[in-house]
Image (cartoon, rainbow, N blue to C red):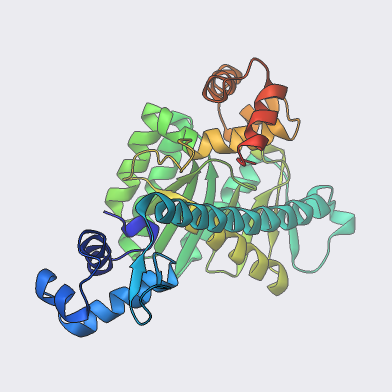
Length: 326
């Protein structure tokens, strides 16, 4: 029951037994739980590392359990700190990727650089994507954005089936908002049945398709993929984009899971919206980052204000800061 907080089954059993029978030693706990002494000692070592037991001052050589109300708060605080650190690493990667994308956004043929190829027009982009897909041999990694039109899905399905037949590993990260589009969700479930690994996340740093870790296609404007794209093949650039993909992949939720709520009771979309609003972004900007309508962004903002008992976004930001949510 407490595995998400870092306790395995045996360690949790040892902790519960110690709470009920604080005078039991290793042998007594082992007999009571049906565990070998080594398993009990491993559990006690883990409890000590998590600060759930400590040496007794009154009875040297024995351990005292930390009360659950204090112990669980310690574990939750530690977990929240780890999540915050992970989020900071992701944000740093996103900032670096955003700078990279900005550096290439205004490229023109006259200023082309080694490792960079510019694509102009939707037809050229689609043709090149199709060729790269056909020549891929091992793996394709994609930041796919939010919902797709039914026309775009119909155009993509033959390529998806070809990838499945060829046995390539394909991993795709969509925005959480894709789950709210019935035809997009049906497409993602179809992809999963084909063998594509699909996850979703609240926000994405950019749209991207990477082939065999040797070429990445990125639109010059994430909100207008028809405006143009660049193909990046430089080793340093690809290494950074691979790291960005892996960090985002690790923080994303598998398609098969339902919306996860953190220790604050917020979904990933709500938590991201709260941070964006607190940073001064408008509801329109929040909607664009989350891949949702302006109306949905307004509803999320209203929900956050209700949760925080605030009457305005400014007050919500202040209350969130007071609670340590930011």
